[in-house]
Length: 344
Image (tube, rainbow, N blue to C red; front, top):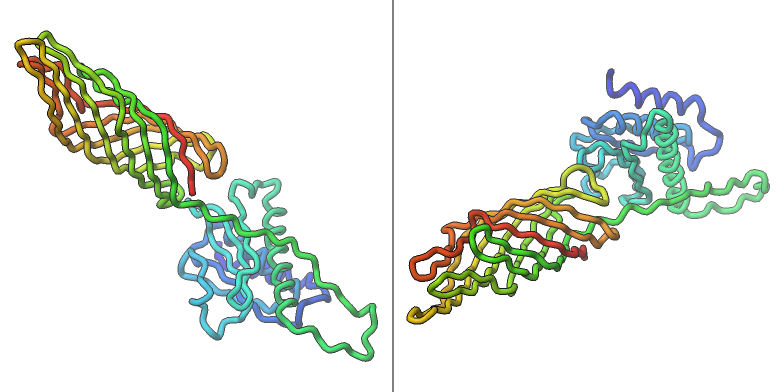
């Protein structure tokens, strides 16, 4: 079906049912939508066009080549000062957004969720969004014009009050920066005992689904390894840059996957059984990390995080007492964590 047909039908319907009251006779407005808009955007455009014509507006249909709403400073100077802009919204561009601007100033914005447009209630929801947008446009134009001079022959019956408009504020932008604290367990699978380690995380929300972050596990308890010739105390530090990807739509219990890389440091303090003598050494290693997690939303800005990771190290660090290897890390090592993440 031709994408212009729903818009033409909406305009024709508005011409048939236009009421006698308008903001101003033949006020010219611009109605804009993207060329590649989906079915919801096309239907919302047709509804808005019909309601605008029914309210007495002269509608100029304009197709935008991009799916983004055109900023006010990119609109041609000769364009009408009032406009209704319609476009896609959401991560998958399945939702629709309708916006009203007057003189480059946004006076109304609303989002129509795809999952709310059901066969039973879809027509009512779309019609309500279009009516609210046109009502907001009428109210903004009435406020924009100076009050007319009183006419000597005006009668009280001729006065028409401005319609009441229920304005809905645009939803606040999601916070970008987050800080998390928690506790974790750093566990080697070859001879080194597990260690309890404090964890600090700095997160940046790049998109609705993707986050970049820095994770530090340091100053934890000492692990140990023993042999007949002596014993060793081991302290492990892990610093990683990772990426977190949200699986599926946003929800309170949100599964995520993580991957990244960074540095691992091993500190070793040895104690020898006479006649052996212990020594202390340290070494740095490169690491890669993959993991799974679960984010539990407490409020809009506070979440509880559960994570489990596998870490591979190069070269793999080992702990030796005399000639006996008593422990090795990074083949792989495991980390498990529980934390609290706060978005600023």
